[in-house]
Amino acid sequence: MFVRKIKSNKGIIEVGKCGVDRIDAHDDGIATYYTAGENIFTVKVKEVLNSDGTVSNSRNHHKIYTDV
Image (cartoon, rainbow, N blue to C red; front, top):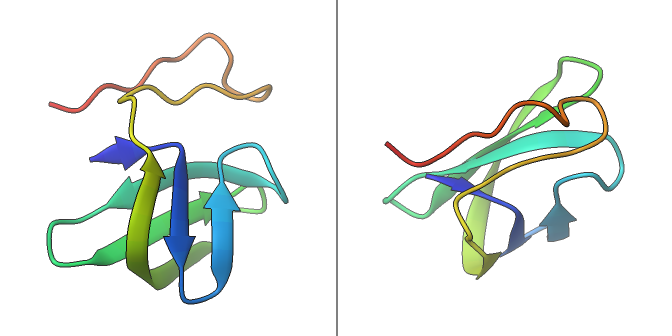
């Protein structure tokens, strides 16, 4: 499920801040987030703060990702 903002063991991670392009939260409490530098990080999710189902940022402003 695509989310905009999560609270994790590394703090609050938000799309558009610090080069984060996309956050993919899984059902087992693990989230994967992708950065603008093509890095992939995995963190443990404490709480999903914003899960409106759409992700849009300055780099991909024309793309809208929805939960399938």
